[in-house]
Length: 271
Ligand code: HEM
Image 1 (cartoon, rainbow, N blue to C red):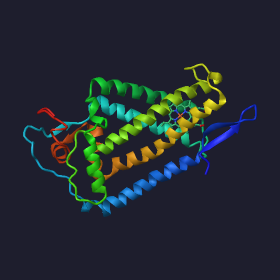
Image 2 (cartoon, helix red, strand yellow):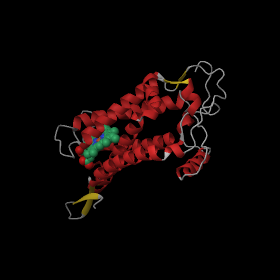
Image 3 (tube, helix red, strand yellow):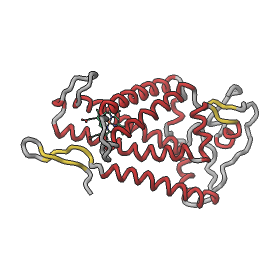
Image 4 (cartoon, rainbow, N blue to C red):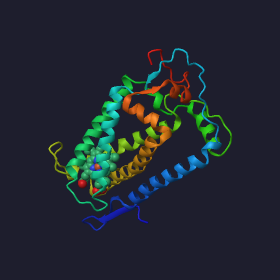
């Protein structure tokens, strides 16, 4: 299986063009395989695990509704989600054979995604609890406990703060590959005619453009897997309370007490 598409430069030397689109097929089927495996696993295996506790210790003073995502954070999430779906559709549908004028829609959605990311960086740095989503040394214990639990040991993983480890890992992956696809996408705008940046094909050598296209393609392909798994978790019945919080902004007191450690995600009496 080829990992890259290559070509020849005017001097007859072999140069990199982009990744091979067989990686798109692999990413898509890996996403589907993960979903199927997880769906079966969660039915067959999950009941043997230690149930997540729903005790009500620390319930005093907790309101019935707890704000999980502010209006601004929800708006960011949904605009970003829409731009990501448009980018995936315009990027990949022509590759799988659906021909249409995709390029203008693609780079405009790309710029919207980049604006969303910039907005999110400022919002999260100055108005949200910045460290709540990043993997910190304290998460190591949870990682060990979760691994033991996955291996079948009866381990109480305990409750987590605002974001459990799997959400933090997902956020980390999206941050890294989101940054890569955005920076390379901006550079690739130099290769096409837009009213935003004057065209400059000579900005890189042909070989270096190949590296830029390969990074863009690789990150883009990974987003197929990341998006399939994200949507799967969002629509799972046991996770719908999280999805609803991204629509309405709040979680109920009972969900809060069942899933979160009030010492790690502190909530005041106003929620
Ligand atoms: C996850 C989001 C994204 C996905 C899935 C995606 C996907 C793709 C794919 C598959 C291609 C074809 C690449 C090739 O022919 O080698 C492409 C091209 C392109 N992308 Fe993206 N992309 C994303 C984000 C962005 C962003 C943020 C920008 C920034 C504006 C952008 C700008 C471009 C441009 C300008 C091209 C065309 C380059 C050319 O035809 O010469 N993309 N994208």
